[in-house]
Figure 1 (cartoon, one colour):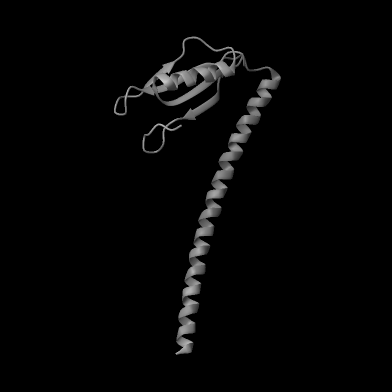
Figure 2: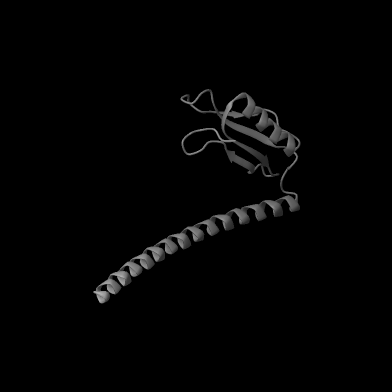
Length: 135
């Protein structure tokens, strides 16, 4: 009887180890994907900083865009500001004001370089996966 109990315990232990091994493999896969995404973001940020240093960006004009909804079931609309903000701080205030006055789903701030190439310098989504407004 002792031998059968010992065998059953070993089988259970092996099953637990295999389950833990599977969880660890999934965690490693997730970490690799996260690292890849973070590296892409870092590369984009470094590119942006080097463009700023070379003077390629007109970082004195920020254009704000808001994706808004009148209510939960209405069709989202894009609002693009017709005038630019001279300071990034002022552009962020435009987003805050928009969030007070509208149901803002997402907001972003763009600037343009000397070749008129758009660069998004800020982007934030304000809804969760269920469609509820966050923050």
